Image 1 (cartoon, rainbow, N blue to C red):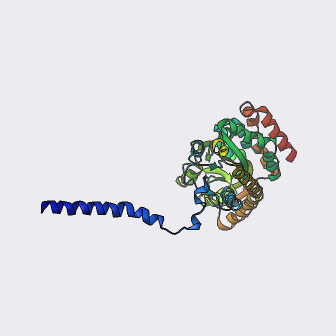
Image 2: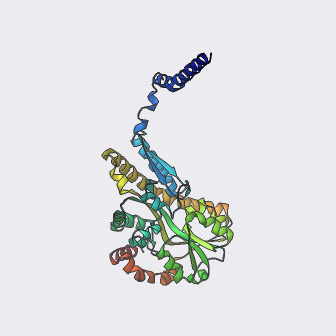
Image 3: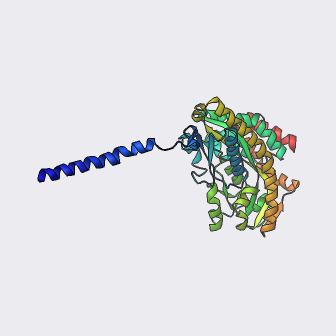
Length: 350
């Protein structure tokens, strides 16, 4: 009786193993073929991380780039966008790129001093008198030299994307003369060149990440900040600040990049699609960023009681007189050739 029971138990175990162990393999082989899955294993997916809102010049350019790449590759190449610092802050993203955690980033050029001091040339005060001057500077020898400088860090510089001119906001009275900013505390980007400018203005500068700016303003840890109109609008800084000065005292733009190692792993066809899409996006960004900053200044005027003052050319000269000495101070750090180029460019457009 005992042996009969043992036989039945053994037979049950064997049957169970057969049913649950082997049957799924037979069933799987009989599944109907789904042609929608064809080619998915060959799809290339790149992660694009950035720290600003989607409705900004950089956010919109990233989205346009992703769409162009998808269209040109018939969906075989996908760019996944991670905006608003959802993956990495602007302080972390360069290391994330180097370590292979992301494939594309577009950091502010002010952050790139950690890679090469040459990038500081774009942060010099009043370097670009007009949008046309920015275009010539980025498309000419200055922009080319800066992108090439990334190669020493095994980074491929793909393009310059612009945001626009920086303005000043504060809660401590209108900023009309350089003396008005003395003693105030400002959040700035991580840039020694910017730090020197605020030092010359006898104001305190705190180098913090972009996404910390709202809390710094809200808590009163800083009196103000410098930024483009599109960033002031998208992050609603105008709700926390009482005064906005249209100064156009500095340029804010981005360098789009990927690791050289990842670039070299791509086929010639993939490289062609990425470059072609990047060129089209960059051209679009140039025109759209100017339009967006102008339109959003009008929206700030409509939505906010913030008091807006635009510096006259004579008033800008007062600021230049205080700030221009940093050109000579920083020449040994940035490089004489680049500083001389930016000086010539400024003179042509003044």
